[in-house]
Every structure is written in C-alpha cells, then in structure tokens.
Length: 502
Image 1 (cartoon, helix red, strand yellow):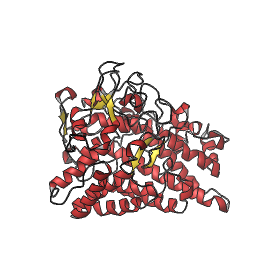
Image 2 (cartoon, one colour):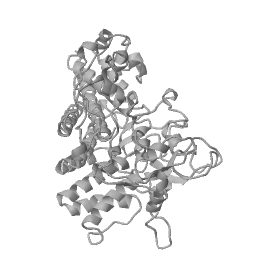
Image 3 (tube, one colour):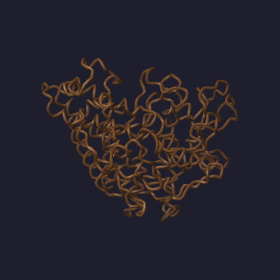
Image 4 (cartoon, one colour):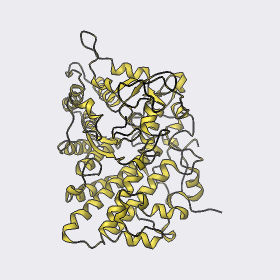
C-alpha cells in the first residue's frame, strides 16, 4: 500500500508547514504550526510572513543543501578535488561510484526532499502574502517577503534541475526523462497533496524565469527590507537570472541580467582586498550567501565545510588540528593556479594564497583550501557564498563569446584576470576556442571549492577526467552524470520516472 511520503508526506506536514521552530526569530510567530490551521493562521500576519521567510533561509543551511553538499559533493564529483580518506567521507563521491551523489536511489530524500520542503514553504508564503492586511508602512515589507519567496523558489528549482536533470542543449536524448515536478501551490493539509510528473526541461526553465521576473519586480519596490547578502535583493535576483540563463544557453538574457547586477551596489573586490575578503565574516563580493549566525546553527566537526576542506583552524597554524580535510585540491588544480609566474618565478595568481599546507594531525598533510575557516570566530561556523560578483563577469564573458562579441568577452575576462594578479590578455593572444577555454579556466580557478565545477562540466556536456585513484572520471553520456530520484518519491508518486541507469 502506498503511503504519502517525501515531498508532501503526512508525517512531515508540520515540518513542511513553515519550519517555524527553526526560524531565525521564532518569537515573531506566537502560535507554532502544530496543525494545518495553525500554519494558515500564522501566515495571515506580517510577523508570520517574516518568520516563514526566515524558515526558508534556515532550511538552506541543511547539510544536503548549502551547509555542505551543494559545494562539497559537487567538488567531489568533479575534477578539482581528491579525497584523503581521513574520515572516509566523500571517497565514493570522488570516485563517482553509482548511487553516491546528492543522495542515493534508496535514500529517503536528501537534496530532493529538502529542496521541495523549501519550495513548499515559499508556496505557502506566496499563497497567503497577498491576502495579509497590513498598514501602509508595511506594504513594502510584504512586497519584500513575496520577492524573496520567488527568489528562493527559483533557486531551489534551478538547483534541483542542476542535480537531477540534463541541462538545455546537452541532453542525451535516449536517456532524458525530463525535468522535475513543478509545484506552485502550498500544501498545508493532505487534501492539497498532488503527485505531478516531471515537467519538460523547457517548462521548468520557463517557470524559473517567471519566478525571477516576479522577484525582481517585487524586490524593486522594497529593496530596503532585503539586505544583502543574507537576504535576497534585486541585485542577487538579477545575478541568479544571469546564471539560470547561462545554463539555458539564452545568451542575450545572460548579458542583460549580468549587466544589471554588475550595476548594483556590491562590487568586485580589488587585487589588494580579495584574499582578505575570505577572512571576513561576510565575503565582500557576496550577492547572496547562506548565513550561519549562532552556535546552534553550527553543523559540527563531521560535515561542516571547514572540516570537509581543511584540518586547519586558522591560517598558518599547523600546530593545531581541527577538521578532517576530507577533500583537497588535486595536484593538477594547484599546478593550474601556479601556472602563470613572474620573471623571477613568483606565482602571480593571488588566489593561490587561499590554499596552504594543512596539519599532519590526522595523517598525511595535504594542501587544502582555506576559503572556509570559521570566519565567524567559531570553528565550523561559516557563512556560505552562493552568488558572488565575479560570477557575473564570467557569465557575461561566456555569453558574449557565443554571441560573437569577443571584444566584450575578452574585456570581462581581463577584469577577473587582473583582479587575480594576472596580466590582461590581448585579442592576438586569445581568440577563438582559446578565448572560451580561458573563460572556463578562470571560472574553475575563481570558484574552486565553491561548488561550481561539476555543474559547469555538466552544463557544457564535458567528460569528467580524473586520475585512476579517483575512479578515472566518467563520460558525459554516463548515467552517473545525473543523481537518482529517491526511492521514497518513486514509491509515493507513480507519475515520476527514475533517471536512466538506476
């Protein structure tokens, strides 16, 4: 007999109904949502909307989303990283072993479940926000909550597509099972449960576009109530639109929204401040990041990004061991960072300074990334950048390359190169495919260990090439390029088709 689990599980309804008990300020909601009626009542006030939107941000902190997996698992699957086996974590992901990705085919949910819980929270807010009667002074605040909900729903749908579906233009036709289910109405009780099929890829992108357009409109009327980078604002929504359009190979739209976001208040770091920015509680280039503000939000020594990436507790201190350093840069990645040198042999790329030798406290010392190093002053407690300004220049460079605007593409590429301490290149030095390859190379070096590389290889239809010890990689046509739909979803929703090969 089928039971209602996963996306809209009866047993999970109180969790789905807002996650208010985990909100950043649950005192804003006096009645906790023990029942469907309570949740709907809660969302009839401006304070309830505030608590609800904070509940979505809190859900992004989950290990299976931006607490770890959207960054670390994607790095393990790609070609930037190698596992150290100091704890055994992420070894199978790094070897690309089937069913070791963003959850498994037999798991209860993983990234799929958590993303859909966040989507349902956004749906409930959007269903109710328009009916909330507010004082004139709170109208902009309500608009902000609506805009943030649209942004967060778009982010979650795009992340689901990146994990579970082929990207537009590089589908493997014989293996393509479509996108992901689209749910746009909140579920507050069992009577509202539906079991939709996976929508076509194009339809999901159409919905994400719509959500981002709605987010930009709403946030444009109320940007003061969505303070970056901890809350989505107009600049972040424009930036996310540029990313989504790049995956969709909609290059003129990439240029439009990247340009709009670049014009915003948060600017690219300069050469002198870039490395120091990674030691600040908030990364100065962050347009949107997931905030970990208090001790209770600490993911801990087993699965936080700090413990995953490094044994260090502070830069330069090899005498104190903190985390495990489960996932470290490959020799090839470090060599690429060191490839451009001065006449005296000095490494030019300042980003190399974010990688240093870890401790021997848990075994062999490796070069590790120090992008996540307890910047809040507490070990394993880091805000996590989701979108940074530098992405906009590289998105626009890639889009302009494919539009034939190679001079503009080179100009944006050189913005990132010179900020990184590298010399600008000329059109004589970089043209044709060499220009495109350098754009991809700079994206790899710029976003090392921030979770971009696997998804960049996937969206461009490239094979993953690895050393034998890491499993040798996999061809783009391999079924392991896509994660499996969780078993509980398949057993509940007869309309869902599993990805090929599982």
